[in-house]
Amino acid sequence: MMKIKGKRVVLPLVCVVLGFMIAFSYNLTKDGKGARKDKAWDQEYELRQQLIEQEERNRELQRELLQKQGNVSKIEKELAQEKQLFFNLAKDTEKYRMYLGKVKVKGTGLQVTLEDGTDMGSEDNVNNYLVHEQHVFKVVNELYISGAEAIAINGQRLNHDSYIICNGPVITIDGHQHPAPFIISAIGDPDVLGASLDLPGGIKEQLVNENIIFTVEKQKNIIFDPIIGG
Image (cartoon, rainbow, N blue to C red; front, top):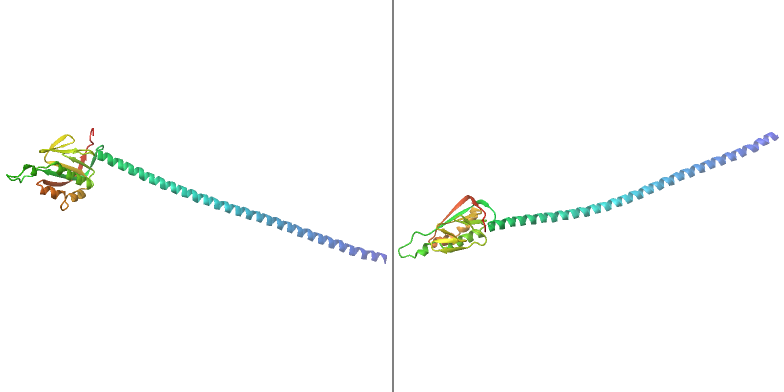
C-alpha cells in the first residue's frame, strides 16, 4: 500500500515539472519571435528612412540640375548674342572698308552713261547741253540711296570723301580729270538700281529734260580694285 502511494505522489510532480517546462519553452519561443519581429521592424524602419533621405537628396540634385541647365541656357543665349554681335561688327567693318575703297569688290550691277546733248540749235547756249557735276551727283546719290555697294566714274572708284568738280567739258574727280562721256558703274542689285533711276519724274527723266543723253545697261560682272593711297 505504501508503494502505490509513492507512485501517486511522483506522478503529479512529474506533470507539474513537465507543464512548467512546456510553459517556459512556449514563453521562450514567444519572446524569441517577438525579438525577431522587433528587429525586422527596426530594419524596415531604417530602410524606409534611408529611402526617404535618398529621395530628398534626389530632389535636391534635380533642383541643382535644373538650375545649372538654366545657367547653361543663359550662357548659350549670351554667347549666341555675342556671336551675332561679332558677326554684325565684322559685316559692318567689311561694309565700311568697301565704302572707304580699301578692299576689292565685284558683282553684278548697273552702268549709266551720261553724254552731252546733240540736238542744240544755233542760238542755244552750249552749257545747257553739257554734262555738269550736278548731273553726275544726282546719279551717284540716287545709286547710293538705292543700295549701291561701290561706284566708279570712268573707272575711277569713289570713296567716302570723293569730290567732283566741273571744269568746262571735263569733270575732276579727286584731282583726276575725265572728259565726257561719263560712265558711272555701280555694284548692286541691277533691277533695284535701274528701277530707282527710271521712276516717273526721277533722275533719268530730269536729266533727259535737261538735254543729257542718258543710257543704262545691266552688268553681270563689275570689278573695282582697292583705292591705293586713299
